[in-house]
Every structure is written in C-alpha cells, then in structure tokens.
Amino acid sequence: MFKVIVPKATFKELEKIDSTNQQLIFTKIKDLEAGIFTSDKALKGKHKGKFRKRAGNYRIVYLKENDILVITLIRIAHRKEVY
Picture 1 (cartoon, rainbow, N blue to C red):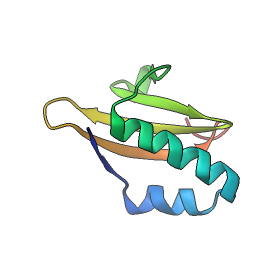
Picture 2: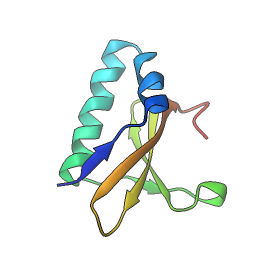
Picture 3: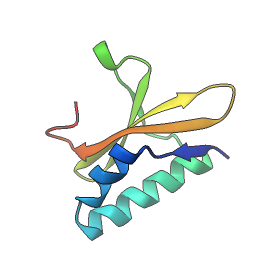
C-alpha cells in the first residue's frame, strides 16, 4: 500500500476537470495507492525519473519514492498539455 500525496496545485488542476473524468482519475489514483502500476510508462528527457498513468484523455504524472512507499502527484492534465 502506497501513500499518495496531492499538492495544492495538482488538486486545483483536478478541480477544473469535468466530473466523469474526475471519477476515472480517482479510480486510477486508487490503483496507485494499491500498488497497481500496470501499463504505466517511465518518462524520458527532462521528466526522467517520473512516471505517467493514463486516465482516458488525461495523464497523471507522478514520482514514486522507493524506500518510503510515497507517490507524489506532479500534474494531472489533458494529454495535449501535460508535458
């Protein structure tokens, strides 16, 4: 079981998304809490060390801390503008 940290800026991005997509994103965040990382991809370039989880047309970009089982959400945005 992981602890998911949602910074204030990320929470504000999430509030702007419509409710059906919010539900999908919350489901994916619960998957992160449970340690389900299937089909997550490691990012490259300037985002190296971060991962992304797909939630429909939205992407959840997160950082996984190895030893302490903490996941920090970096950004939640539409796939056109997330990177």
